[in-house]
Structures are given as structure tokens and as C-alpha cells.
Length: 344
Image 1 (cartoon, rainbow, N blue to C red):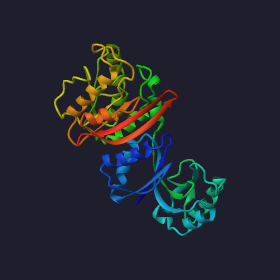
Image 2 (tube, rainbow, N blue to C red):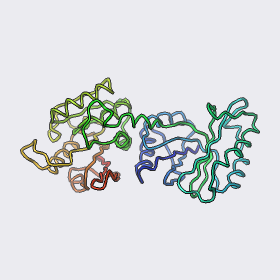
Image 3 (cartoon, rainbow, N blue to C red):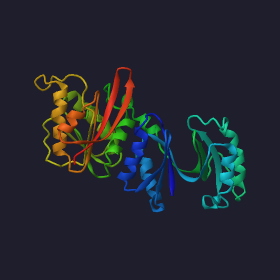
Image 4 (cartoon, rainbow, N blue to C red):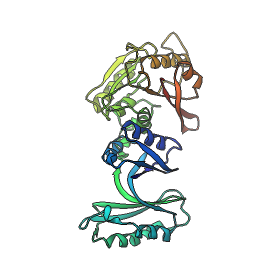
């Protein structure tokens, strides 16, 4: 069964990587069929179809998930011919209502006004003894047009991306500038493939944005920080969103946790200079903290770390291997470097 993920396109590499990691986290075996800038098509076993609801709850950089019915070149007649050749009775039953939507992803020069296809595809579907309902259809047929392929399918799940907007830092009880946006926090969580009821640590938790996003996925979370103002504010945010969490007033370089006691570590350390540990430079603090991350993380598990510059040597020196590397341009003077690392 072919499943299509309509990606947000807000980053070159993160949306697709998040899809692959989330499939693995939910133990859905997959094979990549196509990968375009705004689309990923994978093949999964039909028995895993119901598990896609779990992905819809996890993903942050995907708009919608579809079951693929047929594909063609992005030309009007080729699209109509492909749909005409397909038995749509497997996807809609007599008496059900439907709608048809056409959406162009990027440039599709061969079909300049894609909406003209909607009534013609609608006529094909209508022959199956079903009625159109543009407001509350039981089945939504969707045609996605890329520059190289037209993908026709049915909508399975919409990702509620508005919920991430509602949890923007400024909308939370406690706000502090410079923190990660909720979608980036969620992406990091997904890239580390953590599962429900496992334990995630953020040793530089700040306003607790990463912990909140993980806790909303029923992940057990534990955070620490050493600034009292931040600790108090983080607790405000955690209490607002989560029923269960653990918080410590603690130095990230000297954690009171057992060796190999957590399933994932994800953190966004401070980018400036630190005066809180005998005027130690932040880079030295990060180096010591990454060594602590390695100590408390279970073998074979992943961690995520964000920093203002590349720190490959520091990460490898602590004993980790680098699994993935991504960049997020925040503004002209700040590009975040996102590492997914593994304790082999």
C-alpha cells in the first residue's frame, strides 16, 4: 500500500526525515517509493494502516497523509486517463458523499490552472453512484501536482498544525526569548524515535518547550536547569500543559541520574557565555554536558542537540556517532545546527 505525506516545505531536510523517524518509532516498516521537495511516498503493509493515526498525532512538518490511488505525469489528459482506468469502488461505496480537491505543490507548468480538473474528476467519481458534498464529505479525493508527478489519492489524516501555533513561546504562561519553536522541538523528539511511556531528559530545559511537546505524546519527561528564574517559569509551563513531569534544579554537567537511565536526551543549550560555573565558557559547559548525556543515555538510543555552530568534534569526542545533521536558519545572524546522535 502506497502512502503519501504532503510535507510543509519549511525546511529542506527536516520534514522528510521526521516522517521516516516517526514511521520507525511507531514500528511501521516502510520502503521509500518517491521523494520530492514537498512529497514523500512510502510503501507500508496494509495492516499498518490504522497506525497512521499515531503519526498524525506526532508529526509537525507534514500537512496531510493520503492513501495513493494512482499516479501519472502532471498533464491534464494523463491525469484523467489514469483515474478513468482505476476502479474507484475500492475507495468509496454507493451512498457515500465525496469531494474532489486539486492542489499544486510548487511549480507544475503543464497544468497552469489546476482547479479546472476538479469538476472533470468529480464527474468520473460520480459514475460510482455517489453524491458530491463540498462541505462535509465522507471521502475526500485529492490530486497533488508536483513538477514531475501527479498523485491522486484519498485523504486519511490532517495534521493539526494550528496546535503548534497556539503553543508558540509568547502564548505560554512563562516566556523567555530565543527558545525553540514548538514544531522544531517536536521534530527533534520524532527524530530521536522516542515512544510512549519512555523517558526523555532535557538538561538545559529553559522554558520547558521540548518537555511540553514530548509530554503531549505521553512520553515521561524530566528536565533540569540551574537558573532559579528559569526553573520557576519552566514549572509554570509544565503545570499548564502536562499532568506529570519531573524537574530538577541541577547542573547539566553533573546530573544526579544513574548511568544509562534515560531513553532519549534532547536539548537546546545556551548560546552565549556562562558565568554560573566559575566563569566557565559556554563551549566548555556544552562539552561537559554532552559527556553527561552520553553517560545517562541508554546504549543504542538517540539524542538531539541544537547549537549555534557546528560541534562535530565535541560530539564525537564524547563517544557519540552522528546519525543526522540538519540546519535551521532562524534569521540573518543565527543558523541553528541540529544534530541527532547515537550512543552505539
